Image (cartoon, rainbow, N blue to C red):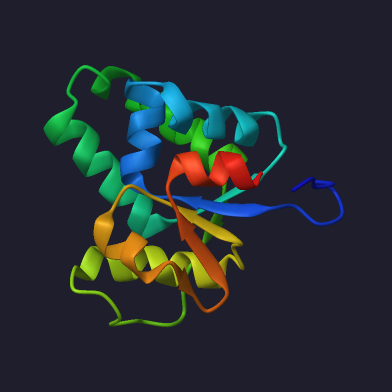
Length: 139
């Protein structure tokens, strides 16, 4: 899939687990984050997902915490921040519903996640739900 970012960008929502993997571990999640930074794809998130990101970093990855303000500033500058107007109750984990809400509001093409509950859906309202590996193959 090729994309002219100025005319019709591929919009992706990076689930918190993917974003943290990109920052802390590298691999395919970091390749996707690099595509975002290079403006080859457009990333979408929401204030609720940013709050979850902040919480997870502080609890589980304290080594990244000193860089958190810089990371969040960069995310707010590069990512499209949406404010979902619809509340969903589609998947078991309520936090996963917030991911779907943000992706719908941001008119995403993909949700990129490692979360099995979301991956089981495969697609929701035309949004493909895939792992980082599958996204990179599609892209």
